[in-house]
Length: 231
DNA sequence: GCGACAG
DNA sequence: ATCTTGTCGC
Image 1: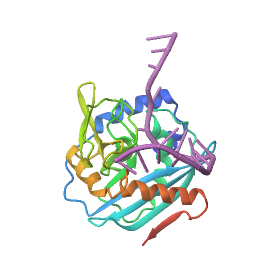
Image 2: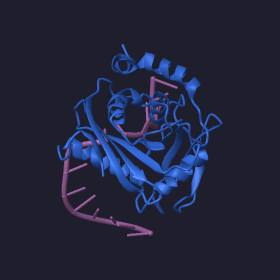
Image 3: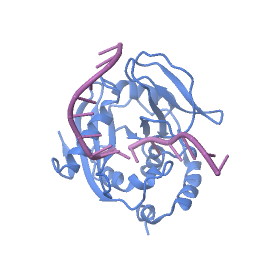
Image 4: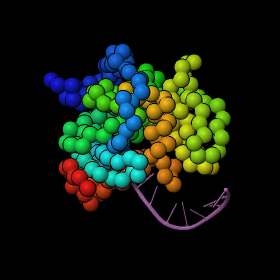
C-alpha cells in the first residue's frame, strides 16, 4: 500500500502518531532565491458530500499574473477533525499537484503550517510529502496566542504556543481581522511574511487563496473541468 | 469534567 | 468548509 492509500485508511490515533514521526523532518530555512512563481491551493465540497474538489493556481511575481491552474476531484474517506485536516484533504491536493506542470517556487495552502499542536499542519505535511517549499495561511487559530497588533495592513504579532514562535497574526488589510500565516516546509518566518505580503491586493486574503477558492468552487459547480491549463 | 478546536 | 440576504460600518 502506498502512502496515499495509507492516508485513506488510517485511523485518527495512528494519524497522530504519524504526525509525531514526520515532525522530525520539518525544515524551516530561507528560500534559495527570491520566488518568481507562487501558487495557491484550496478545497471545495458540498455539505454532506465526500467528493472533494481541489484547485492550485500559479501566479507570476511581482504582478501576480495568473499563469496556470490545476483542477482535480477525488473522494475522501477521512472526517474533519481539528488537527488532522491533512488526512482529509491531502489526497485530492496531491492529485492536483501531480498534474501541475509549472511547479511554483512556493505553495500557499489554506490552513496552518507549523502553527499546529504537533507542528504538522497541512502545509507542513504537504511540503514534506512533495519536498517543496510551502506556507500555511489560515483564517482562524488552531493553537497558540498572540498579543495586540496594529490596525494597519502589514502589522503583525507572533503566534506563540508553549513559549515557541509558531506563526504570525497578520493584518492583511487595514481595519480587518488578521489572518494567521506560518511556515510550512523549507521556508523561513521572514519569507513567509514577505511572500504573503507580496500576494495581498485589496482584499483580506492573498490573491493565491482567493483565486484557488474561486476555481475550486467552479469545479464543484461544474463550471470548470478537471485538468491542467496554462493561461 | 469543561471548553477549544485549521477546513 | 457549506447553507444564504440583507445590512451595518469604514
